[in-house]
Image 1 (cartoon, helix red, strand yellow):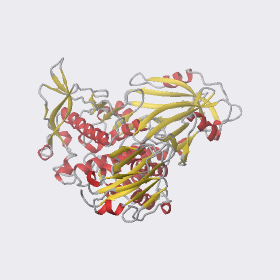
Image 2 (tube, rainbow, N blue to C red):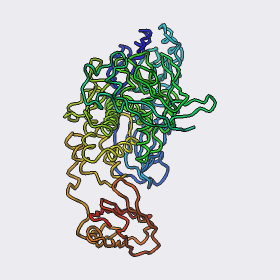
Image 3 (spheres, rainbow, N blue to C red):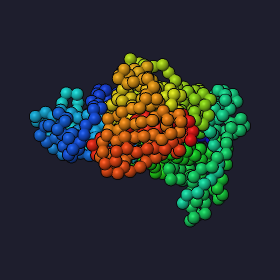
Length: 616
């Protein structure tokens, strides 16, 4: 049964939750601020970097030319196709609040995209920072449910007209995690929520896959209603038995709900002891606490394996703490990234959030975003993108599992008397349909991705999305996300899916330069094709007659030839001897499909699309 705790605790956790459900906000915690509306400047010009990256950036970005200005590297992460660097701008050793320079580089050391959210520096800036007592005095004015903990550091803050010396505070108070900026007189200049809501062995257990309404192919309504988490027979009948990763604790001789990707914990009120079992079975009904715990474990394990199967091995690849009985029993869920340990917390108000795979995967989507591009979820359109990607990842996961009502996100948790849920099927157009509400604007991006899911399939759509997320920056726009998505396809697949992506983005208003892309059939079928560094002959014989493909090298310094399939996987490779003039590729190892021949040399890299219409 659901437990409802102290109303004040519920007020604090829900009012400050930034989650999958839209919530009201206390007057002293505004959701909108002029700083959020500022835009980063995106640059998608390919830039070779010959010296130190920081020197290249300093030379190119005007705001870094002032004396005393520098860059500090915050994060570095490697994706399958390159490196991604996040910098903060500093003046005389102090950070400029929310400043950011994000640089995305390919494997050859070229900058392929860059976002500049730096600030101009005045000739003189106030170096007298507020005293720390303004913070302690502020928190001393209120009687707290629990003693808050916070850290304070000095930063320069842009108030819309000038830089002012300020104090940045990161606050932790129970489930509440916030960031505040204080001026010299103790005034809160800016405030934002830091929550985004929303020994190995195998065990078996019962779950919803993905939720009881989808498997029953019905809508919310009697007898398919929550009924205060009781064992409604028609709901329990929708449980399915599955096998997933967990842990056997040899010290207690029990099986515990921990895997390489999930750790079921209790870090939020109300506190329950996490479920264990003497046998490798977790067969609970929905009225039992262990049901939501096992449900969350299974779905997070499943989506993480999917991520790794696509080639991404550093996105939330650790046991993330998950509390499925948290937030004082409230009807909300959050991803928290404050401190050194990101975690997920699910409430039990209305339908228990962790009973719905959409909620579990949506919140995990925030963790994916934070893992790929930490410290970048700032700005009105950027935060809407985070919600949109969470909605898409959840809908993509559920649609692959069961396509019934796939367009409804939170099919079981929402679309009922508790809240309206969300959709990933809309006709909203960018930018005129933007409202400034991160939840209301999310469907522009998520609906476009679901259209691409229908065009090119889940695996390809997801893979391009995950790759593009490494390039995300603070204060970027949805149109920037479209550019990064096209760029990710180019880096992963040599632009194979450029045409359907471009068409969808153009129709939605996210990208206007479709005319620069050849939308005709670009597969090399009949004519021989010359591509500068290489010439390919007998494409007709290779495509239709199972004859050898002949490759002539115009660049005699070529070092390697590689053939990739349409998923970007290398299926054939050969080293090229110095001064080699030509070589042949046998069709024997290539079934029907689309391929890419890529030739690398110290001076140039070239790729050609190939088709194989007959089996060996």
